[in-house]
Amino acid sequence: MAHLSDRIRALFSPNRQLLIQLEHLIGFVPKRIVFYQMALMHKSQPEGENESNERLEFLGDAILGAIIAEYLFKKYPNKPEGFLTELRSKIVRRETMNNVAMQMGLNKLMHYNQQDKGLRSSHIFGNALEALIGAIYLDRGFINTRDFILNHFIRSYIDLDKMESTDSNYKNQFLSWAQRNNYTVSFETLSENNEGQRKLFTVGIMLNGELFASGTGYNKKEAGQSASQKGIEKMNQM
Amino acid sequence: MAHLSDRIRALFSPNRQLLIQLEHLIGFVPKRIVFYQMALMHKSQPEGENESNERLEFLGDAILGAIIAEYLFKKYPNKPEGFLTELRSKIVRRETMNNVAMQMGLNKLMHYNQQDKGLRSSHIFGNALEALIGAIYLDRGFINTRDFILNHFIRSYIDLDKMESTDSNYKNQFLSWAQRNNYTVSFETLSENNEGQRKLFTVGIMLNGELFASGTGYNKKEAGQSASQKGIEKMNQM
View 1: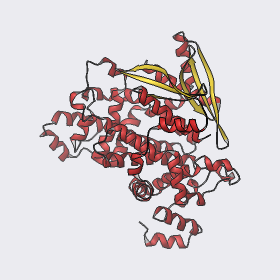
View 2 (view 1 turned 30 degrees about the vertical axis):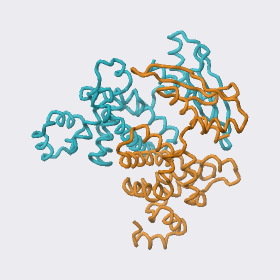
View 3 (view 1 turned 45 degrees about the vertical axis):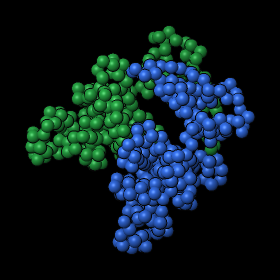
């Protein structure tokens, strides 16, 4: 996609350096640099107070979700919806996105308050990657964004086979974390409701007697997995 | 989009009636009817056990989310991310989708177990509308799906001004429901965790002393709203 005319334009641009870095990252020279500058602007910067990447993150997150959904839908024609949903959530979860963003080197291009050590653990690079996807979409449209996500994101950084077989037994993962940290854990059924002909269960994880996370599902096992997944997200933030 | 050749094809098709009904609904004659037939097949039908609309619903939900995100992003250039997220969730929530699907008459085209009275309250028509969006996407691609969503969904059925100003004070809504049903309600802060420099609160709604729903947010008010929203969803299923 890197046309010669775009290259020549980049060479004479005041944003020469950024354009070259972005070309390296996304595979083409941006046309409208302003979207990308916004995608790289965290609200912890003074300039970011009015114009940060949060709106672009909202857009990019949605576009990414749609493109991954289509990709998985077509790649796994015989798998049920639950499989697709679970695999997508593994791909787009904050930890994955943040890791990929750092492997891409997106953190080096970002503007954020580097004094704020807490920011590094709050997935701002993954959020910026979503914002970058929003910027590409506005700059180049759906098809080019799909090319970027398939070629520069999924095929370059996501090991689908590994992810598919990754222990998605969140309950085991959660229990082993709780054990390492000497918490007393119990799973309790908080409620059972009827949804159509099916029952919907809510299971809560009690940590030292206090509700730590809860999840819902059409059976207790599913609800316990959902609660554990939320518990894991929460423990990652602790 | 309704080309004459598509019309002629429809007239001589064994699926003539369905093609004409669909043209009326979506504004063009489908090319590959098989996607639409699948979108209209609920898993409560014997034929739906292997091939129901659930996978298409997964795809359509994602495509819808992306297109609404772009639409709101462009329509409200000065609104923050939180506004866009909230408005989108009002548009795509199960109740809205189900109502629109019924106004469209999608329920009349669907195949589902009509003996199962519980199904009608479990948003199967809204789910089928999402599946229909998935079918349109596979049949006609992104741009045509966007046209359908903007012209036949948003502009025809969604009153954005009204939705924008709708009481999104879920806590008030929840409290008035609980009062009507003589429940004792209290809101309790279940946990406070650090996420970067920010605190993340979890607030639970206790109904007659039992945890009914919980939600998280960056302050207690936000967490209470989120818990109330989940409480409302849950009460709608009761």
